[in-house]
Amino acid sequence: MEKKTKVVVVGGTGYLGQHLLQALAGDRYDVAFTHHSCPLPRLLLEAFPHFPSFHVDLKTGLGFHSISHHFGQPDVVVNCAALSVPRVCEQDPDSALSINVPSSLVNWLSSAFPTKNKTLLIHLSTDQVYEGVKSFYKEEDETLAVNVYGKSKVAAELLIRDKCQNFAILRSSIIFGPQTLSPLPKNLPVQWMDSVLQKGDTVDFFHDEYRCPIYVTDLVSIILRLIDRWVLSDDKQMRLLLNAGGPDRLARVQMAEVVAQVRGHDLSLIKHVSASSVDRRVVSPADISMDITKLIQTLDISPTSFKDGVRLTLQSESRSHILS
Image (cartoon, rainbow, N blue to C red):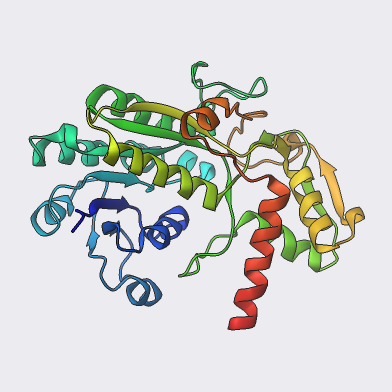
């Protein structure tokens, strides 16, 4: 029988983590995941009864030894865990650094497994490592983050590149797509835009901050391709840094207009405002759109357009409402 690939998803209860667990559920992978919140959501326990879960504190590293003891050495670790709300990071920079810079995870991998080169770390970074003063940043451009969140992610990248033998760092943009199996309390971007426009009230959207939002299924596919490439490689060497964004450079107002077009909402409800007109208690980069040529060429992947992703997201939401 073919040996299963052992994968640990750190932050398995978050948005990307849950979508990744769904994709890994099958015969090819032996999967474990970590969580910080307790107790674990019942829906997750029911959906993945065969996936061992481990309570891990990223700040202290407590809990990682249980993975070594009960699950063994993973072939791949995917780090989806983060304190990712820039305003919260600004208010509590110590927590942002201790969670977003995965020192405890990197220390565990290097100390628990002498043959550490056999484990690949796939780490989720962010487009907010860029300063935001031009369009279509490339991977080799300088990282000059303007807020605590971005700076913590720059520090994480430096740590991984310095301490890990094998890694893939993915600089992700805004992730959008269907709701998770166990619904999250935070607003999902497309669903939120749809719900506020549906109410018929006028809504303000920024016209001068640009991102390259990525459909969650594409980001999961990128991770799966990296896992497969690692498993199939003979020399077990990978040191990759990739911009992981979608194909469209969009301001929030353009995203809202796409949602309105797909759903037939009144476009006149969408009001264009400047980001500088709102005090978000955090500095936000103006244009962190990314050049994704390297991603497309390296993994032979064609990311979904924002409009198609919105259509798929809202179709999925309609289906889940009918089923429930």
